[in-house]
Image (cartoon, rainbow, N blue to C red):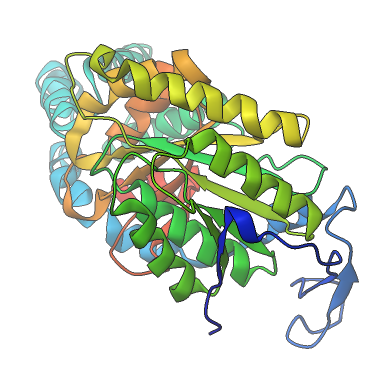
Length: 370
């Protein structure tokens, strides 16, 4: 693994854009272990293929998703017990207990009532006649909601090089760690990654990101001196990404103070995020391609006011839910998508560098309702 090269703002240099060599699995009869396709990252289909590779990887990592949601699955195991000897006369009692189980797993009152009442209607109409049919209908209703309201779970990286991804969130939610893990995943799929240390508010943030750059072998742009504006760091990073043929620029940003009763005290930092968004758009029209909000799954439904605020200020395009491995609150994934209509793009299911998993709705539903 190569060492990263921190690049200070005053030391930017130009190099020629590089070609990428990618292995594409499942291409006819050619073995994906040996077949390689040379392509320019600026070609319109590159990011589409990159997204497809990530999705294929997600499906191959179902076991990680499955183990990551073990506590949620244990919490919902009561559903199997409830439905094992279900009969029509017990409908109200069973549905009341099912409702409690969903609420305990942070499905949230609105989505829980919607699911339970839909099941009740189908049972009374004679459409569901056994416990197994009720469970299948429960899984189907959750899956349909995730697909309908979060139907753009793939990274939307556009067609222009470099793609720019801003990572935002509150302090302590796993923002910088998620950026590092995302860099690792993208680089492993053949993309040339540049990190931008845009969290100029927290002194240790740049150091933390530089460690991730070394760990993943990615280049990084850091502020040369103190009190430089975050928007300036990101602007210079995107310029370098454009000049030197990087495929993706991952931009860290200052984390807000996690005040769940309202984030108005973070007004200046929100203004900074707006400035960062404008700055990268001046360098690459249409950037940022994605603004991903990192949410700590352990906070459960308390994440919703955070998400609303960030979305209103900068327009969130996707969510990264972290720390779901240590929580019985996997239902918060469904609640966030239902409430905001913003797709979950990645979930953190462990501490390892590979444990930021692309979100796959079907794998998630099977993991928690197995």
